[in-house]
Length: 600
Image: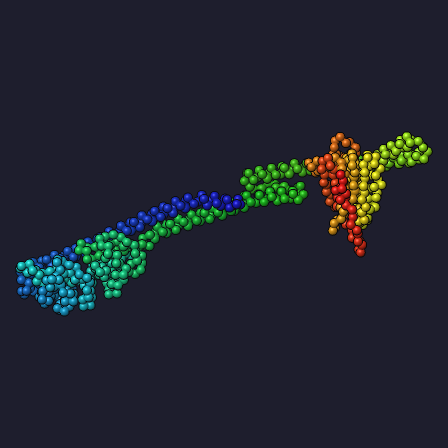
């Protein structure tokens, strides 16, 4: 994860507790606000239903008074017994009527007819179906409006039911009375009968069309009874918190609905503002962190990286320099510049030392070249003198002495050649001159050069014939093979040395095998180093032969491989590109690998 992402994650984790706390507080406040709304709705519903209880209680008292006044003979001319001011004092009632047990109207106000009243009473004037006491009926149609029938049984002198008294509560009056009571803004008040029919609604009149939505939307009011609160859509579909209560008779329900969204709008706005402020603060913190990261962290790190990259590409003058960054990064840049200054000084010192070493190597190379030239002349003179003496002596002891002189001069010449070759390769890199030549000529020279030294050590040198041609530098390849054979002669005490080649599709592998002391596996990676010898007890030579072999093979681009077993011998192989003269076929060659397999 990148540094900026980690920084932004830290800021986010820092602000999350604040967001959680604010959200919890707003949610808790919103819950308490809703609880208060529920309580207010229930309080308003209880106040409204208490007013309806007073209306019903007044109607019951009126009916009881009329019942007492009309006794003991309901069948008499009761209308004469009704006080004259009854009708104008009780304008809330659409009609007051007394129906006898036989269905006749004994007395009625407002021009009430028997047919109209019969539809409202619905047979409850007869003794067997008369109401037991004061009863609130369901909403009924009356002329151009609706009324709520209130029934009260009339009794004769013997206590028998002689008829029923009917008060028709005018719902227009009830609607007007409910409209006059104070309600909160956007509140609604609904009164329904026991069947769920809307008796009155504020705002809006109680019409026939409102009965169906009230019955559909508020069945819970008629089923639950009692008092309580509920959240549900009103008759207009708006979600409201309804407080509901029933009258003492249980036949009339009043519900007051408060707009839930309006009640929680303020707290919702506060919550949204709080979340918006936190989100804005978080965005601002992210922006500041991003800008600060780019300017105070990323820019200095890029300068450090650019300076390091320039150093890697060889520009030792690259520096970070002064930069506007935190103390830690500024200190890192200063440390980098100090390190760069130190490395630049070391580089200058090394360059000066290298020039001094180059000058010394040049002097040494010249000295070796001059020494080689000066030493070769006496060696050549010794060789010529030795050959001349051979013609003048005849005794075997004298010939043996001349052979010793000849072998010593040859060994000295080979040591001198090795030194000169190592010097030339180290200080004057020669350029290979590739050409196609037969391997046979090179192997014949190796046989002529090393047959006598091998025989002097009691070794058998076998050079297998090879008719293949290779593409390489003949002199350099001869140097490699001669050094390998010289190394084999030096480290082999008995047995034989085999030189041969084998071919593949693209290569000719020239191998030198011996039955010498072998090489330990841990030394196979170090034997090609300068002045490195396999055995410290054998101090012949300078330990430069294999170093010359590896360096020459690298110049030619030829691969070298070694296979050795301590106490059994070694096999050095140089892999040379094969030449393919057109139209020429070669016979299968004897291989050095096959020869060594036949060794005891």
